[in-house]
Image (tube, rainbow, N blue to C red; front, side):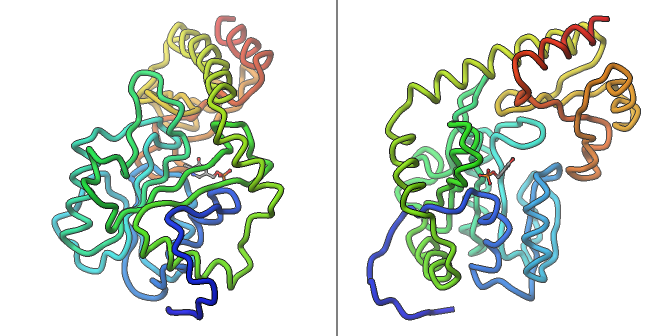
Length: 287
Ligand SMILES: Cc1ncc(COP(=O)(O)O)c(C=O)c1O
């Protein structure tokens, strides 16, 4: 789709109304409606699938580049991942970049938990060690919701391949998907300040350390969770049995099956509860 361009500017990064609407609308805004398949992670934030379905596309779950690229029109990666906190290695990211470029398929990385690495330092798909000299065929999605606890501001960012960013930007301004000036000013202030991001990360780290120790002491296992805002917990049983076990202690978690069939034996415990609520959960797990 080509639309009139009275402004002529070519931004390589644009603000979005939080990242969720971008995730849900990206296939549509890239003009992919109607035919083809979107690849999403095996266990994934549900909005990648929503966006594919909304655009009338097929959706296929995979954590590795498939041998058969026929019909694939878009790839979603999410590192660090929701719900499991998995971080893709440089080699895994490079494999997707190479695959996308070989087949002419855009690869989009949702990196909204990028600042929340615990056991590893998450790498952006746009990093030169991964992308090489240019960002051709690649997009990165970021959000201030997690790093600045600013979900209510609806403050997201899209960057990467200038041609793809440009295409999205052209459609967005004709849809009125524009970020209000006061929110853009707040974003600029937040992005210029690392101190509050560090402070918030340490708050999450303290919650994570305490909750993880309590979960393990209660006999459950934590998989992945090397970054991000969640513990990916299993007792090697159906997730609903674990949900019942937690509910009996007054603890609410998300069943892993919400995020795809491969999540059916895990639950997602969030570190977004207050310190006081985390303390209560720790006590109840011990009791
Ligand atoms: C992986 C992932 N992407 C995107 C979002 C959307 O965040 P926001 O719209 O607040 O930027 C979330 C929210 O939980 C998420 O977990």
